[in-house]
Image (cartoon, rainbow, N blue to C red; front, side, top):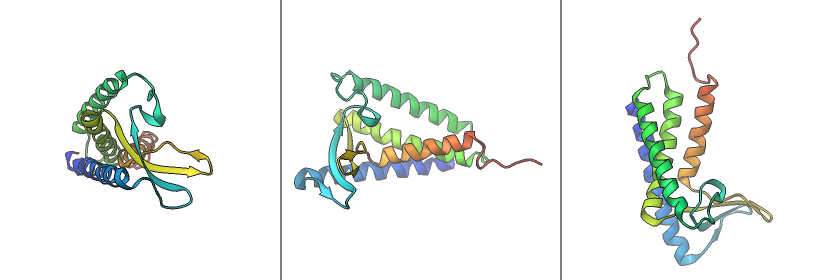
Length: 156
């Protein structure tokens, strides 16, 4: 299923390009309100999902680099074992791989992940996220659907 690797590459490239553009623009101009529930706001996330461990002293970056590196290696190994019938699983794995590689690159280059999509309702804000986070989320949903049998051909 190496033919699906383009998905991971597309996620990685779009993630890095949007982070570069967002960091450049938002650093110069500040937050941008797009709608009554959506802003672009630059966030340097030193933690994990939902800011987990963001207030730690810095050791967490090494932990997240190791975890993301291992995840990428395991995903590549799993991809090597897939068959052409494993399209949903393969697509999910490639989305997670591209997102993990994008956030890993940020941690290696900057020591934090660049987030910039800010969704909110009144005073409640969802934690800021990026293209990589979105791809990882969609990929995880596909992995769950595959585990539940969605997309599998039934043999009658």
